[in-house]
Length: 233
Ligand SMILES: [Fe+2]
Image 1 (cartoon, helix red, strand yellow):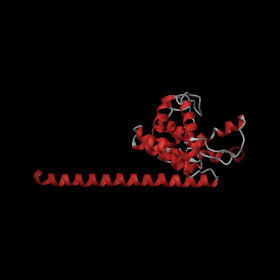
Image 2 (spheres, helix red, strand yellow):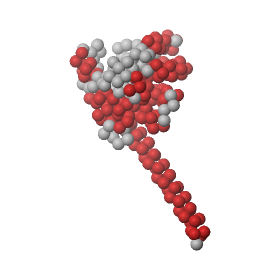
Image 3 (tube, helix red, strand yellow):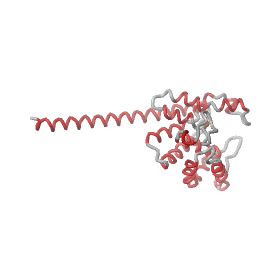
Image 4 (cartoon, protein in one colour):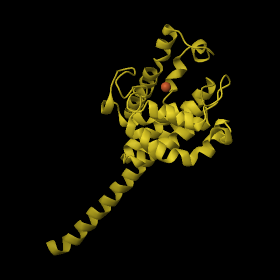
């Protein structure tokens, strides 16, 4: 009798395994949809506060993913990296405009307040199921490799790898991008500054990995940043 039951049992297992994998696929799709919706919603919030730099954040995500892939990050880490690259400054929504838009240097108190943006970003994103890890990565995106950053003064590999990546590419992008009150730095000067701070402010492995492909992309970058390629290279 068992000879007759075995194929039916096996068939039953096969059906439930298929249903299970379908269910997992559905959950993964739902999770990806939620992630994209959250990114879109927060990007709109950044737009409202005039904090979204469009090309800047998309480019950060592309560079970040490339560095992450070259460093062998797992798929789940790459997903967090995408969120962290796009939304690392979401906490600036909580910083007063007088400080965000101050054209000159911030005084000590203003700078202390500005530094709160990484904690604010963490405090908001950690409330969303599935974003807890990305929230932590955002919390630490201004840590320094030598331990002199903020908010926790973490150093070296104590700093989450995603935060170390966002820190480098964000700094580089800020250097080469033009602002209303200043012109972006030429590529070679930005590379020099990145190398100079490699091992102190920045993770040297991340810097090396980023620079291994950065130059090849510079014409696009400088076109988007409003800096002329000929003056930059
Ligand atoms: Fe930041």
